Length: 87
Image (cartoon, rainbow, N blue to C red):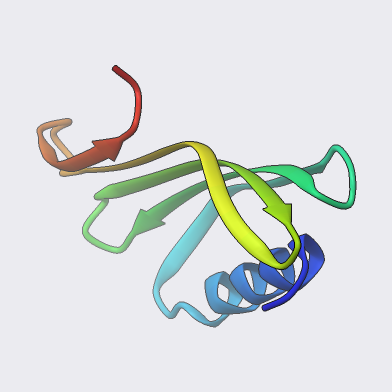
């Protein structure tokens, strides 16, 4: 991947290929050619939930994530994992 648009397109294709998953939210926010936000909310057949939030910066074909959050929980709300770069 070389551009923000390439990255967003690849993520969108991968999400659409997931079987047995309800896409509750898929939101891309392109702020410039170098800067964008991505928010995804996926519900699985066992009613577990995966939420993804990324703020992406691309400079000279190098990707960096200004912020990220990956949150996965069971149907009862108990957390399976959560990764983020928030202090």
